[in-house]
Length: 272
Image 1 (tube, rainbow, N blue to C red):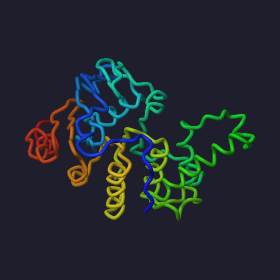
Image 2 (image 1 turned 90 degrees about the vertical axis):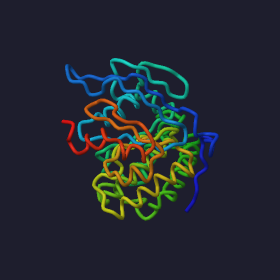
Image 3 (image 1 turned 45 degrees about the horizontal axis):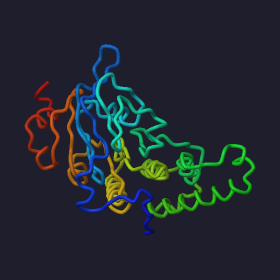
Image 4 (image 1 turned 135 degrees about the vertical axis):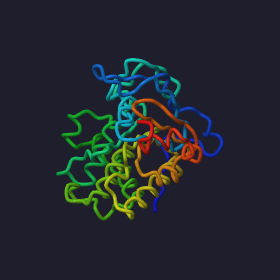
């Protein structure tokens, strides 16, 4: 397997473990009179895999949407790479290094795997549309460089055999891997994964779990993920934050979260 050079120059080991990349302070989000998130605070350390879990309707996806700017919270402060703001605009999130995959695969189904991943490079393209249409000179040189980067990602995720295949013809597990590839093409410092294992069989889950670990360890990419498979969460995560009905009920290492009675009650429906 080819190993990509990490463009962010992320630190390894103890150097990176205590540096806060993302910090959320007292974030609240409402839709009309319905509270989706209530006064939630937690952080994501640089270089870690941070899980966000909870029963259905807990506010997990809403929290990811706040982090990458799809939703604007009514209260709270978001600090990313040391810069504080009351909200994160989507274009700013992308330009500053936040990439996202979705619970329901969001790909261009009629386009090939290669073209879908190339779409993730748009944020790094400097030549305007005129040059791109001409496909000449600087624009051609730029495309060659971006294509090289995409080919590295294709090798990294072991999807060489579907390079030219329209993604709409791919099985679901491979579509999820292509979506991960497109997110990696943005060269994120923070990668948000919304239920990356949803709808997968055991073999596909094992593959995706391996790639998530390798993205984190080999590329140095910080990951925040939502996942319902508790086995996956406990195996992959450095820390876990648990939401229930829009409130934080636990925030700790996986072993302690597993033993938290409030978490157990929430998942079993005892407290409601």
